[in-house]
Image (tube, rainbow, N blue to C red; front, side, top):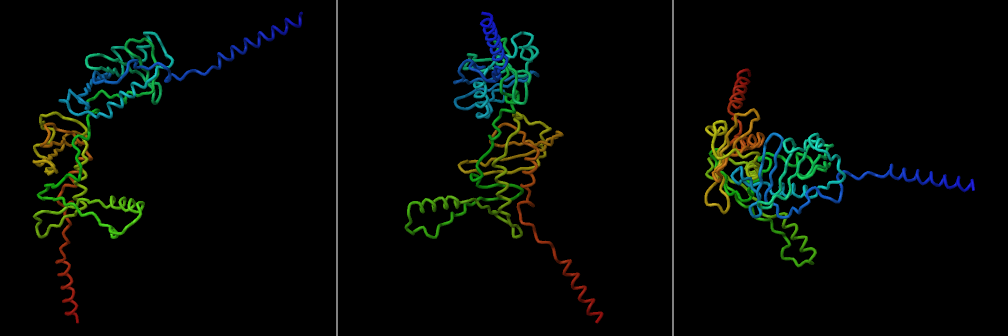
Length: 361
């Protein structure tokens, strides 16, 4: 009997120890994963997005048809892929296990209604879908977050940099870009540069019967030889010769110019437009009027440039290096072949040396 009791005691101790071990070593759930999503409602159809930061800066984004716009910038086009990317990221955030549940924790993690890093409001029309608070960081790519109606604090995979609160961070920076192949003419630095398509190369064996595989290979080769644009100088003076590669470079730079900020529709003295550093005009395919480009040098310490197009009412800021490159490549010295150096002084020196040699003989 005594031995039976001892065995039962041992078994009991083993069971208790096993239970404690299971509880102690049970893996903790990842705080960024869970079945419940931070945005409980579906995000399909979101057409209003508001982002605020702790400094009181606020940006509103509104969807008009298929396009996102910035109403505070006169409905200027927003970067739709960036907006949709943020909404997709928000909809994929999972709550996981709460880090804290007290009102004191909400303040400590900067998730209070009057103290936060980001507050994002999602709407469908006038209906609020979710209001989210994002606070202090918990590592490189994690941030504390909560829904407005919650006291629970979660750590989610996101950064405040994913949701900037300045309008300029959401503009479509490519709004002024065109295809370089659509530029027919550039008038700049007193020169008229005219684009002409070069004929595509013709394969020598175009009339030879070949198997289908070989014909497909030939077609691929022909695609590589599609017509490209070459540049000529219209009404060139006898001593002027264009560098076609330089003209192509300038056309590519103008075609892919990016906007860094929208400055509004009113000219200001600090834009430097009273004494522009560059004036040029582009004639584009399918456009009745040429588009005038005027660039002024800003007075700011950052050395930014201001750009104005005749086709748009706004003034734009472009990066300093972009403005500098445009000004340098649009200069006549960069576009024309350099004149050969005057050799007359050298010839005169040679003649003088020859005469001196004769005199000595």
